[in-house]
Length: 467
Image 1 (cartoon, rainbow, N blue to C red):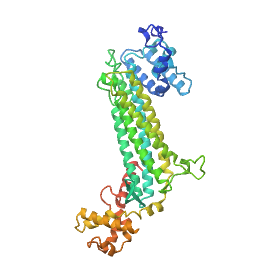
Image 2 (tube, helix red, strand yellow):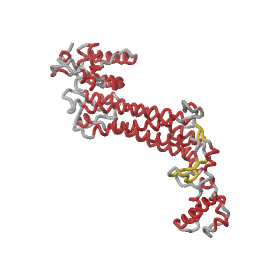
Image 3 (cartoon, rainbow, N blue to C red):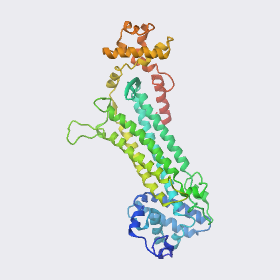
């Protein structure tokens, strides 16, 4: 038993305390019930730290071997579910350190030389988030691939495009799918940037002022795969910007998933009837036998509140904290874990759902035939005949009003009926009133014309490596 453990508090840190910690305090302040998931990162960080201490003469080679072997054995026990995490030891760091000391003796008590739990938890948290960034990037690629596969499958098929949830202009189904591809591509870029900024090692900053022992921060950073070390020990000790940025990126991802889910819920309703979501991703009603409910999109939409809440928790947590470390920062972990679990589960199941979903192309094409959806094309036609756009807009507005009153559509009007709104309208007008012609005329960059959408599909396939 080391001198530390003979303190009145019985804690690893209890040298200056004469009384034990109240049971209520232990229960209130413990984090082991959620930070145990960091055990692999804690052990990896400790091994790198021990190797550095040995290289700088703080540990002997024999002590290094004992520490490394002991940590490996503890990791195997945790992997196998045989390790007992104890609440009275507060967190994953103290649980592993105590087990190491019990296993190998005084050498284990030397491991914490030159570091604090402040930089220890920061390095564990960063290593964890770095892995989560990589995992979420993979999941985003899977979702992006699903959109591109769907876009390729439905290339040339038409649907109404909407503004204000009102039919606006005809577009390609593929164009609509590629809009989400762009959203999730930005999400991927944000996650890559987030990973880049968090990948600086905090290890060696100790409590908040650095260490007076001979340590080599660059050595541990390199061993753990960091791009370098943080520049200021005080900033490092109190920094959770990386967690906020990660949660912010997760929030945007989940919001995009929610927007997509909202459309899938609408499109699967009888009122739209645009899409068939596989039975394997739906549930029924406990009382209404006819029901097929789009529960997965609804749940993804609902889970957005959890991820937004995680971000708000983190922002609120740090808003009033002075430098450097404050115990409040313990509360930064759970919101991040919840965001990770929610976003990864949502991305994973959405990729599956998209791959097993089918569009009702006849229904969608039929929906483009009503609502005077080529009104803008008629206005453009007039502009090309030197009618000022605002005047053209008024002309077409009156033509649309006529259609509404008489239950007609613009392509159904005779030339005589159309020319009463403007003598400029000639028999060539029907080329622009055609739905397919309208879509394929949109050849500006990023437009819904077939040639542009096919180019976009090819570009996305190349980006994703789809043959």
